[in-house]
Amino acid sequence: METFDLTAHPAHPAKAVTGVTARILSLDANWMTLRWKVDGAGSLVVPPFARRARTNGLWQTTCFELFVKAPGGAGYAEFNFSPSERWAAYDFTGYRAGMAERHVERPPVCTPRRGGSVLIFDAAIPVSALPPLPWVYGLTAVIEEEGGVKSYWASAHPPEKPDFHDPACMAGRLAAPEAP
Image 1 (cartoon, rainbow, N blue to C red):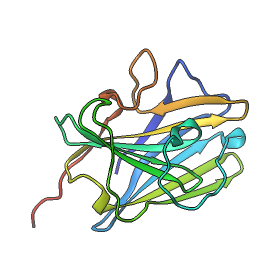
Image 2: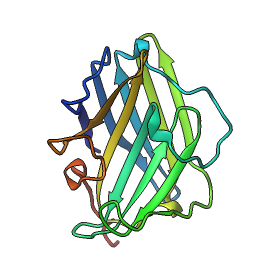
Image 3: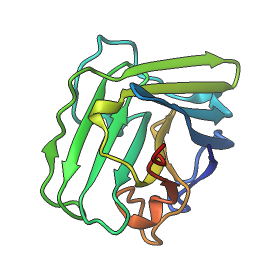
């Protein structure tokens, strides 16, 4: 599956992070696994481990996100994943409208691995929590570095300010499986 080289929004450059890539690592009948790789992560602020639980406001520090919608559709789903193992899932009826918690039967599994100046972050989501295929999707990241420096990473950005809900940030496409 396609790997996306994410870029920081020009209004919020990174301090030391030199790159962020993201991709769907695998998708089967039960789980979808996503991976983000952060290069230059030596001064990255990583929230401490906490028990897995749905939590709002994860985007206020280092957080990894997935936005998913049907091609041409107005509504979409947002998933937030923290290296702390906290997560959130929301449904929207339109652009930043009609926000509600998305039903998730089993919590996602968040796995950060850090070594030297690299952070690898995997998130496994139960397929039952995802909208049906086909999708237009975006993989994004909020990166906080020491000193409170925050950068906002996506495959594309609207010009004025970071906004992961903007359709420009949903550059990925995933087709429905073909019938046997």
